[in-house]
Length: 103
Image 1 (cartoon, rainbow, N blue to C red):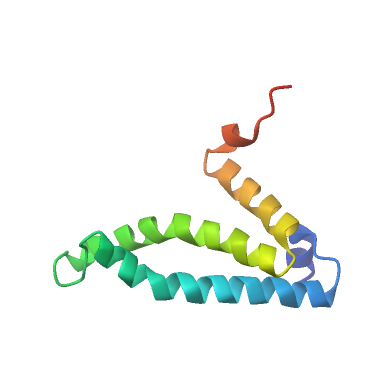
Image 2: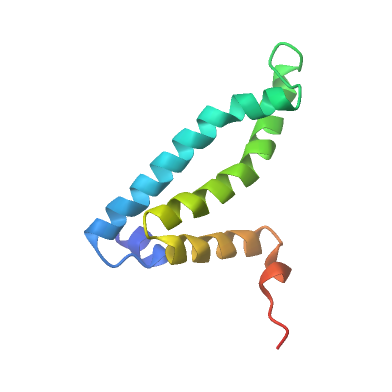
C-alpha cells in the first residue's frame, strides 16, 4: 500500500479513501453504461460473436472511463492527482505528444 500511495502522491489516509471512492464510482458507472453504449452502436451479444464482443466493448468503454475518471475526481476534489495519473497513462500509450509544450 505504501508503494501505491507513493506512486499516486497520496499524502493521507483520507485522501487514499477518496481515491478508492473515485475508482469505485467510476468503475460502477462505466460498467452500467457500457451495455447501452454498445447498443447505441448496434452491438450486442446476440448480434455479434462473443469472441469479438468483449474486446470491442473494452475498446469502446476505455475512453469513456478515462473521461468519467477525471469528472468524478473533480467532484471529489482529486482532479490534480487523477489528471497527473491520466497524463502518465496517455504518455505510456503513445499520446505523450498531446502534453508537450511549445517551449
